[in-house]
Length: 139
Ligand code: 5GP
Ligand code: ZN
Image 1 (tube, protein in one colour):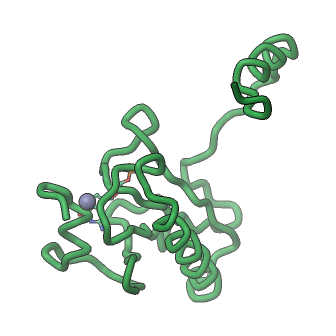
Image 2: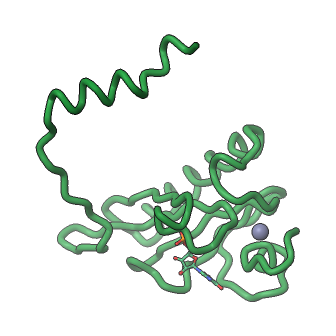
């Protein structure tokens, strides 16, 4: 548990939340500022900052919990679909630096404010970029 981490405090039961799931390794609770009705956060009990900081074994436990909770929300709310969001770093909008997955239920015809606007790609730019980040021939 990390001092001054709000999600560590929630996981330890020191700060109240509306919890909807708990097992040995993770909890899920309602987001206090929901983007849509039923917006849930899935949080590991062990503190890690973000996806890159998380041990593989922790992720192997956590991702099935995200799937299980999302499947439950789809039936229990019910909702028509859902977005899984996971922010890493302040530039990406991360405000709580304890790994978490957002499950944002979506309802037909309702905007949850999380859409992005695609732009048409420049093929030369994509080619150069792909060469730069190609992981297949690691050196
Ligand atoms: P981030 O922006 O880091 O990806 O998401 C953090 C989320 O945690 C935000 O959506 C915010 O509303 C939620 N949050 C922050 N503090 C609390 C809290 O004390 N209780 C609950 N239930 N949610 C919180
Ligand atoms: Zn923490």
